[in-house]
Image 1: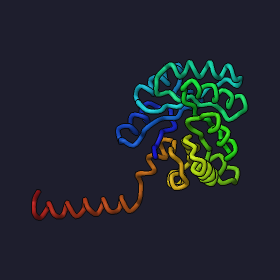
Image 2 (image 1 turned 90 degrees about the vertical axis):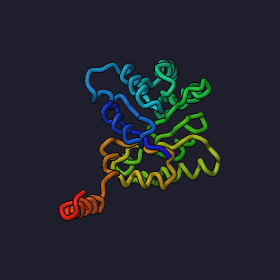
Image 3 (image 1 turned 90 degrees about the horizontal axis):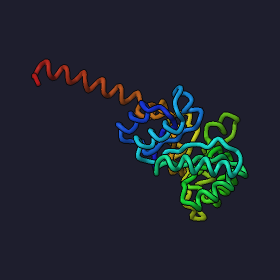
Image 4 (image 1 turned 135 degrees about the vertical axis):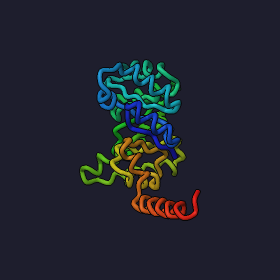
Length: 219
């Protein structure tokens, strides 16, 4: 499985790459807008050049032909660009056309197994079930990931599942166990994954013991 960062912040991306645990990035217009007055296309291209792995960039058009044209333009920025298409009828039509042209598509805003199946049948390279947003309304986000994974496994569907809308590190664990191929997470959740109080406690004890040893025996 793989971890992607759900961000458009260059510093966060570079830190994740430095740690050696990030294999891709997912972005959207809202995330790019947080980075200030920058060109969307130039920023996405810069991210793709840094990551050298899948970088999802989202279309904003809702018409099928406009989505296709926008997706082709985004895809031309870098070979690693994956085009994010919304899970709507026009989006699935665009997914079918784009996938037939060899342009990888990440169908986003997936909230049911049926939607994921339609996206996969249309040729999507990825589907993105939104875990946290389902949890927010009292539904089972991880259960959705599990259901999609079971369907894809039974029918040998190659579309990869990106667990998205990740709120905390427990979501990461649950999504991986449920069968997600990818978890895309905010930088703060990636940082959470490093933390455990027993790690801190153990390190503090090791250092204290070492100081006593050096004091009495030298280095």
